[in-house]
Length: 457
Image (cartoon, rainbow, N blue to C red; front, side):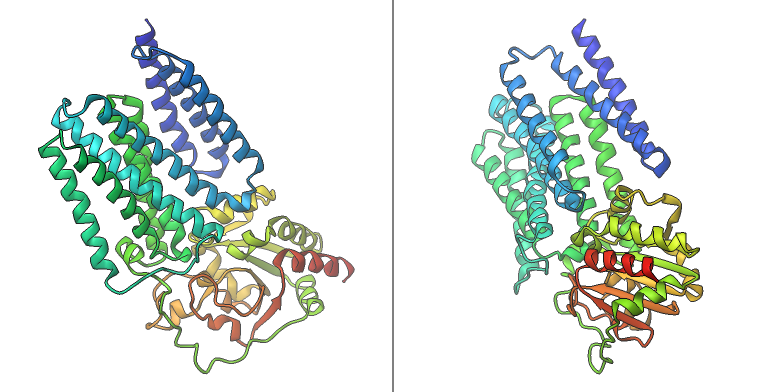
C-alpha cells in the first residue's frame, strides 16, 4: 500500500511542479505558483519517506532536521540584496546532492548495473560535479570574495577543451570497463575542475546568464539521477528545471545580443574599451539641491535601477522618493532591463520587496519610446544597460545590445559612488553627455536626502 501511495504522491508532486512553473509566468500568479511548487515538494518528500527500500529512518531524520535548520536560517537571515549569491549557493547544494547520489549508487552496485543506468550515473556525476564548483565560484564572485572581472590566461581555451576532453575520455573508459573505479573517480575530479574553469573566465556582468545556465545544469543532473535510481518525480522535476533554465538563458542572451558561446568563452569586459573613452568630455557633477528641484517640478520621472541599487539596499529609499513625487502630481515609472543586476528578475524582486506596484515596472520595449518626453531619468547604479555605445559604436564589446535609451531624456541624473567603470570594465559615454548630471555618493543615502529635499521644495 505504501508503494502505491508513494507513486500517487510523486504524480501529484509532478503535476504541482508543472502548475507552479506556469504560475511563475506572471507576477499576479507568481506567489500562488510558488505555493503550489512548495506543496509539490512536500508531497515528493512524503512519497520518498514511504519508499519500500528504506530500512532505517535515523539518518533520514537527522538529515531533515539539519537541512530544515540550514534552509530556514538562510531564508530568515539572508537579505534580499544577497539573493543572487543565495541562488547560486542553492544550485551548488542541489548539484552536490545529485553527484553524491551518483557516487553512492556506484559504490553500492559497482559495475553490475545496465549500461543505460551506468550512463545516467556518469552524466549525473559529471553534471552535478561541474555545477557544484561552478556555482561556488559564482557565489564567491557575487559576494566579492573573488574579483568580479574575468580571470583569463594564455591558452586558457585550449586548456579547458583538453580538460573537457579528458573528462569525456574517462567517462568512455569507465563505461567500457565499469569495474575501473579509478576512471570513475578521476572523471568526478576532472568534472569538479571543469566547473571552476568554466566560471572563472566569466565576469559578473554576465552573471544573469550564468545563473540560468547553472540552474539548467543542476536540473539536468537531477534528471540523470532520476534515471539512475528510477525515480519519476526527479526525472520530471529535473527536466522542467533543466529546460526552463536553458530557455531563460537563450532569452537573456538575446536581450544582450550575444550568443551563449560568447558568454561562456568571450571573457566579456577583459580588454574591451569604449571608443568614447579617449577624448570624452569630463563628467558634470550636480548638487543634491539642483537634483531635488528638477525632480520636484518634473512632469514625468523614470527610475532606472541597476546593481548599484542592490548593493546599496536602496529599493525602499527609491519607493519613498517616488511616493513623494507622486504626491506632487509627478508621473513615476521604473525602467527594467532584462539583464539588470546579477540574476534573472533581480530588479523586479528587489522592487517587489519595497512594495513598488508591478504596473509601474516597464520593460525595455515599452519604456524606450517614452524617454524623449521624460523630464528626468534617474539611473541608480546601472552601467551597461544604459550605455549608448551599444547603439552608436559598432566597435564596442556590447555593440547591438538593446539598451534603455535614457540619454534621450531631457535630463539624466546618475547616482554612482565614484567614477569607476563598473563590473564590465567598459567606459560609458552617457556619463559625459551634456544632459547628464552625476550625483556621487551612496545611492541609499543620496535618495533619502533627495526625499527630504523634495519634501521641503
